[in-house]
Image (tube, rainbow, N blue to C red; front, side, top):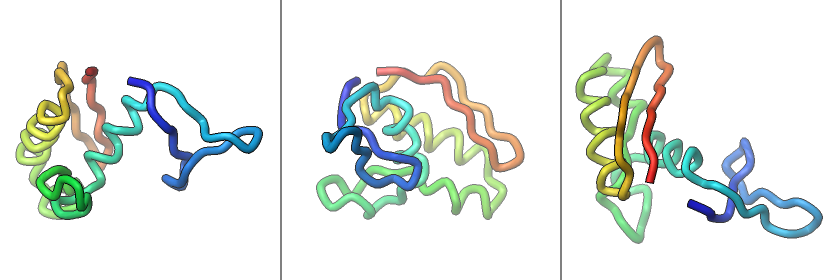
Length: 93
């Protein structure tokens, strides 16, 4: 899915004075995982809030919420792996 890309600071990415456009799938996944419900005014029910799950050491709950949120965003989830605060997700639109 092509969209406006963000840089590593999650700010708009520019190249040559123009916004950078490209495949935003990984970016969208990252934003869904780190966002909490209520962070997005336009859709207050989206967001995984991974930090809370990791703090509670609830890996099963985290994986279930990732799957739910990614599917609500239109992705098909193939695999989710959580280990030592590292989250790997295989999913695509």
